[in-house]
Length: 160
Image 1 (tube, one colour):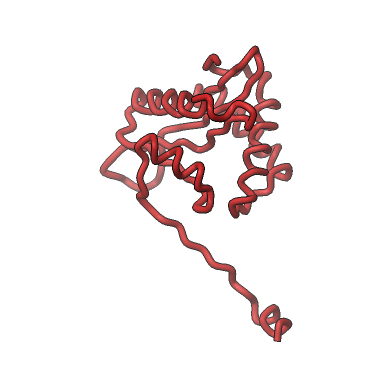
Image 2: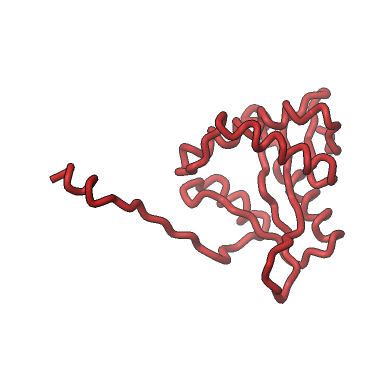
């Protein structure tokens, strides 16, 4: 396995991998549509490639995983500089080989070099494997997002 910066021509392959990621996340309650967001994520991936904010894992010249990251640039002043890991994905056939850990470590190193003092990421609450993966790498809960479905008055009356 080899880590590197992808060439711009790899954006379509990366978009395919992101679609696989988004498709898999639906099983854990993600609201994102996979294929419907292909063009949007393709544009974002292209920006990340050009900005050197994306690392790929290659096996025999094929991209088998990637990580996207950046330093948070928000509107609010904070007491720390936060790095963000936005997406990390390894193809299922290559999981359990340390590729995800290597990608995460590479992103963390780049974020540290860019001045990040802490690193934040999101994970679906129902994705126990992902939660365990990040906990093994020293991540702890910082913030919890809650949601509920809202029924309209018309929808509620239809059920009665």
